[in-house]
Image (cartoon, rainbow, N blue to C red; front, top):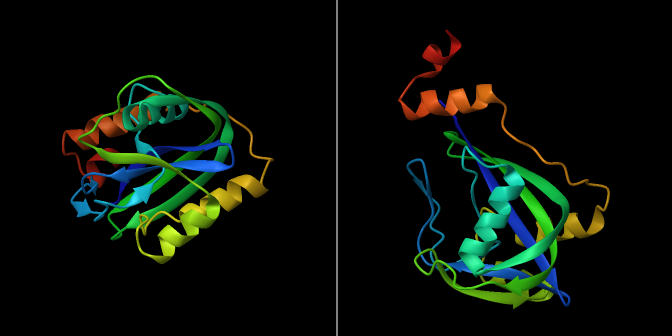
Length: 177
């Protein structure tokens, strides 16, 4: 069975640079280790059942960087699978400017820094960026496509029921009944 995971990302730009976080630990989705410790990526995380995707992006930004941004729009949506067992649907929100609010969660994130697109390309060439997240391609797609509109999306009740059943260990066959 393929397990769906919804992720919310924040691509933050300020003074021509992009905000990246360096993972302090390996991210594990289901049973799959992404080997992300020490790698650079956008602030991101899983969407909780009780929040919208935009709310999750804002929460993850605060948790991982200790700050907030003015989310301008939904930048792009990235999809993919991990080992054919997990389906990732990743919403990348684009924000401009940054305001520090307080401390970040240090157990998840080693450090937070600003990078130019050229510096991010160098990180990718050196293998220092999350290899399953094409940072420079996402930035370029967001910068080139101003037509993506910011749309608030909230899971309908039936999706919450599916997650509840999955958490209880229900199988695909049981979900079809």
